[in-house]
Each structure stands twice: as structure tokens, then as C-alpha cells.
Image (tube, rainbow, N blue to C red):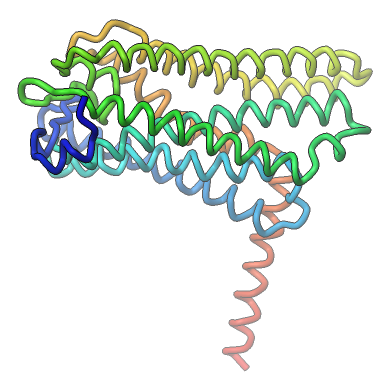
Length: 326
């Protein structure tokens, strides 16, 4: 089995793949580009806002906001690995992506998605500690523990993504290298492979699915304990507030995992229907777009931090105008 570097050096692989996911008439291509541009700009603005507010406001340096900041960084990485190239291909009416570009997309998508899932699991544990063990919260979620959890999420995802990427691009590819998807997706790459070693990557996918299910199981268990504690809150308003915060979290996690599982586990025959494209868009585009709203911008502390940031900027502009007038 040849590795990626030797395949590039020996020139045994074509220099590009064709992404045929959103191919069609030029007007439709412009429509796709417009929709993806709006979603991408919204996702970038939302996540950059979260990163900025949680970094500048000292009141938002608690563990929860530390993990939110890192999650926003990887959400930006996930959506930026795919959407700008999709927009560029739609506008230029070209569907090609270089071999190295395809390698980078596969690695970044896996790395960002796996890290995001790890962080969502860590965040559920953080909420469990805060709600179920409030008196010991600062001891449980101290700075050292938070750094260790974040580092584990990053290192674990790097190893998994590197193994998947090396395994996928060590395969041989047949035909015209046409990928029936709008980005380099492992299931579609396996569908055009003529290698005898494809079973290795399939086994790796199944192992990764089991690990992801373990993360999801951990999140579910955390929220079961959280909900059981919330039910003991005497105030109906307090219960409603807790549920309105937790249930959207679970919805996004469930949507992200279910669409990802279906995309990776369903039989792939080399072609992709509109349903497959929607499923892929759900786990690539929706989490980075929805996470800033669900996890951050609905939060009172985040809103207060944003207001302080805006007032600070407005005051600085007013001071500059007054200086110029004088």
C-alpha cells in the first residue's frame, strides 16, 4: 500500500478530482453560491463574535466560555474547509479540486468535526458539574482540568483524522475521479476506489462511529442527570430556562451525529442524490451556523458582554469625533 507522499512524487495519481455535487445550469450554480455565501457569512460573523466577546470580557473567562471559544474556532475551520471552495466552483462554473486540496479537505473536515464533538461532550460534562455539583464546580472544572480536556480533544482528533486521511489516499482511484458530492467526502472517495484494501478504511469508519456513539452516550447521560436535577427546582420559570438552554443543545448534537452517521454508513454506489447532498450540508454547514446562536447569543452573560463591547466601541468613536472637532 503506497503512502500519500510517494503517490504524489511518483505522479501515479491524477492531479485533481471533479466535484459534481451541485453541478447544473449556471443560474442554479449562482443560486447555490448565493445560498452558501449567506450561510457562510452568517456563520463567520457569529463565531467571530463569540470568540471576540469571550476573549475580551473578563466576566466570560469561566470554563463554559473557554470551551465555547474553542468550539467556535473549530466551527470556523469546519465550514471554511468546504464552503469557500464550493462557492468558488459555483461562480466559476468549474468543479475541479486539486489532489492536495482534496487531502486537505478530508483532513480538516474530520479534524474539525471530531474536535467539535469532543468539545460538545466536554461542555455537557461542564454543565453537569455546574448544575449537579455547584459547590464543587470550581474544584472539578479548574483551569488545569479544562486545559487537559481541550488538549485531549485536539490530540485525539488529530490522530483519528490523520489515520483516516492516510488510509483513504493510500487507495487507488479509477475512472475520471468524479466525486458525486460538493466536497471531498470519504464515502464518495471509497465509491470511486478500485483498491483491494478498501476494507481497511471501512473498518476505521466503523470504529470511529462507535467512538462517536460513545461521545453521544456520554452527552445523553450527562443531560439525564442534569434534567433530574432541574426537575427539583421549585420555580417553574427556572425549570423552563434550564430546558430552553439544554434541549436546543441536544437537538444540534443529535442532528449533527444522525446526518453524519447516515452519510457515512449508508451504501454508496458512486452517485449522490439530493437527499445525500442535504444530509452532508447538515453536518458541514448547520452546526457552525447554529452553534453561535444556540450556545452563545441566547445566553444572558454573552448578551451583556456584547453590549459592553458595543458601548466601548461607540464611546471610543465618540471620543475620536470630539477630539477631531476640538
